[in-house]
Image (cartoon, rainbow, N blue to C red; front, top):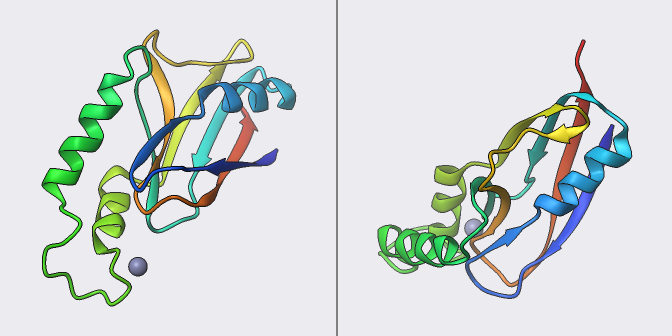
Length: 133
Ligand code: ZN
């Protein structure tokens, strides 16, 4: 089953918790045992799994990634968003989560985050929900 989520970012760099939306999609699929692939079809965004309990984890992540890969650093890419392209590749555009008992097998503190690196924009997240063979 293929599903799409629209995600609207409001900041230049932002992590948006999409865990509940992915959970709902898995529920709707009816798959009890299998996998959910979360794929971001963009070159300046990403997806990651990290702590969802304390929102300061995301604040720290954003502050640090913006220090490691600054917005301006003599980049050649004419569009002016090289930092976002680099962050997208470093963080990655897909995650795969096991589905067991009809639920995402995430750790207690884990959440799934859409990562915006060149916002604000409206983005798409593709979910592929598959049953075990
Ligand atoms: Zn670009």
